[in-house]
Length: 150
Image 1: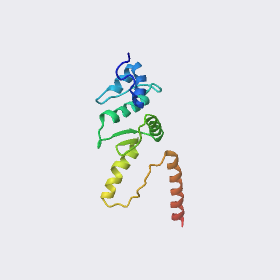
Image 2 (image 1 turned 180 degrees about the vertical axis):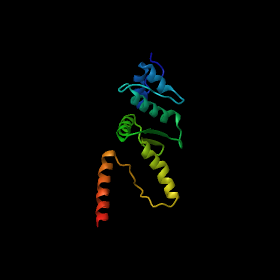
Image 3 (image 1 turned 120 degrees about the horizontal axis):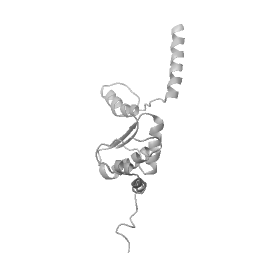
Image 4 (image 1 turned 135 degrees about the horizontal axis):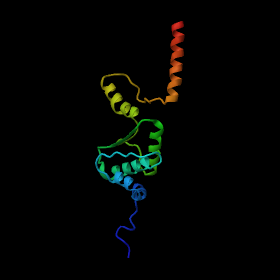
């Protein structure tokens, strides 16, 4: 005799969530319905827990037109979050944002309100990585110096 639902096909996040059950802290964070702070050292599974929880929230809790944003401080972390979410069949969409605080503000505050104010801003604007910022600054400085010296 089989258990009810034993043959049910699990969604990717449901399957991944099974791994969290063995760690009480991860499971508590995953199951929480209110605000939750996770304090743990490197390699303890914070990102894993966050991405699995985000996938669950999108499937079970967040109904359109509402959405969810996962905001971090650097592009490398945002890229890792995107890769892990892709493995859980979560893709960026109108109601899903994964990125830096800078790109969130640019996309959701600066661009929409700049256009309302009539400012001519290009449709595609990106926040430069730190390595790109230095190259851009050096190039701009050289050009300004050249113009100033005539």
